Length: 430
Image 1 (tube, rainbow, N blue to C red):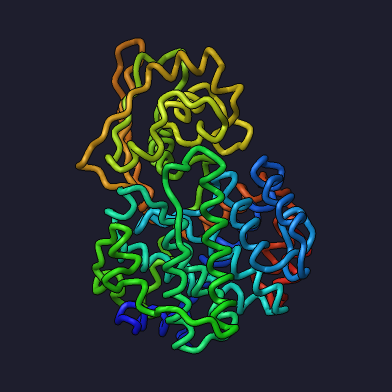
Image 2: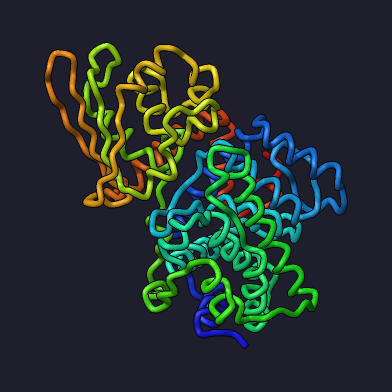
């Protein structure tokens, strides 16, 4: 028997509610961001492994992989979810600390292409799915994340299920059952951070969403109460279970509008510190010491003290701030490499950087204190939740996308995302 939470989520996922224009415009930007990260990520080692696996399994040619070739929709979602998160350059929502786009868009575009659906319908379904993933993430709460679960993979799987079920036209009862079945498939651990396992978590979420929605559509039966029941997902995965707060104004207020896009190619937990340090005279020769104060939650996420790989470098305050002090562009992908991790200049500078937990700060704030060799003390802070005008956000995002996939390709994709084409039209650019 379904629970109140599941009924409300399922009802929202298939409702005729029209998202407001601000939420839809933000979803279009995130779609472009997701596409750029996926297209640019195809050369990553983890992308090569997932593409090879997809091609080896073969099957019905339903949906395109980043890098080309069509495979079954579930496999496309798995591979593309992984590939688009391989660079760790995709968007983040701090309400639950998750990356909504990689799981949900990967599922929605796979089914959209397989069903020859229009872009507007796919993007709208993805928006519903991403909003639902944020709400599920809020319901699970910080205890779920702090225990070690990766919300991109867990809450994201429910979002991918919602988008998939909406595109497949599931009934209310079927959507409840799909969310219940997803409860037995959603998985992902923060223990994988800094390895290929982190982007794979996103791929697993996307694939789970497609798989369970297709199974329910085919007549598969599951417990619709497996999300918040006594032995359900929340109870067994350290969920806090505050449904009232998580579902407040569902269908009226769109929390997805608060999405944060990355302008540095590393873990989003590092970005507030990088933005704060940008305002200081942060040049390597003048640094006597640099202290970063951050929310305690990030100490177990992105505070690797001496990373040895490019992936590990993206989860290290000391490493990214040392890169910035050396004049390296933290927006460039090639700034994160094993070779730079071993650079004596960077290693020496890294030892001058200290990271401290500060409970007075929010998860989106950072405070940086620079002591120069001449004795001067400089301080700066930044909050990632500071509102950014849509026009400025679009400008910065287009600059990032141009750098990742080129101006011509970027312009073509952006024009299509705002037009009336199909998911297949977008896939032709994969």
